[in-house]
Length: 408
Image 1 (cartoon, rainbow, N blue to C red):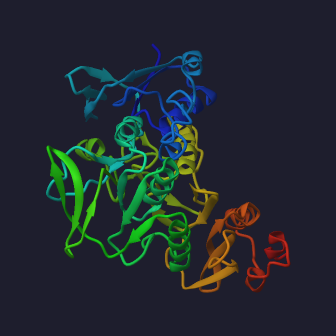
Image 2: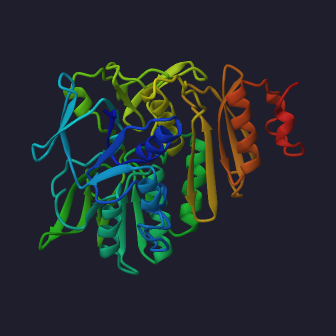
């Protein structure tokens, strides 16, 4: 009798996991349960090209249905899993249907963090995480209308850029004293504040949203705790995401800022793996545990999880990298800048749109933010991945090639 693998969540991690399973030799059944009615799709375009209606849902699919058919992967979309019964090795769907498994993969991803303020449920307040979220936003867009973005992280900045391109009047409200406070140096925040200002975005920091004002059940303004009020035709909130860990937690799996897995993506249950935004994993290259919200993490960790399901060991330890597209800018980030104590600048962030911020800790290169600098990004990625020695004194010298950073 063929073994069965059940995957919870039709996410990016799930798409990679099921295709890798076949490559690793799994010849049993594969069934994926997803709450949305779409096959796994790329999420980064949602705030950019998809929002601008340059792409359809089919355009952003990670793989088309024909490939899944060839791999004999059965997708059961629009189905919610309500419980994992580890003792009986089965999952229970929202309608009570029970499905058994031999191996289980949890790829539940994450969800948006919602604001808990008065008026938060009125029409015209949007969050961005899914295709349907974007369709709802598109239905509210008015050329020359007033859009309020709440949150000065990368999603908020990308949304501001896209809505401005559509022709809306955009104001961004940020709780902290500057943009990107939790994720980047003040130099990068200053740069993006300048660029968005040049593009016509009004940025207001130190703004704590206290309520939403509405007329006939639709938002008309955003009120802040300092008494300021901003008119709005619609609002987009981007204040972070939360890992979807509840199923795993209720099943008794180990949880600590995500589903705890080892370097092979195995949970505390030998028959259950997990991959993607929902996991907390060890990284040998960084010598720490962390939870990452990124496409590269989902892809590489899913490969490790698929190998484990097949009884193989494929350790996952990659240098994290991320990106953000805004206007004519491509920001590429590599490494984790946690605990940095020095910044080295290559280029001019105050007047140009191309530069690098190198993050150092105790004289060691740990991360870099590269704005329109793909060569530096690739070199730093190689340096961190291979733990190569670097001549720090050369980082700021634009007369030399980035490859000359490497010693030996």
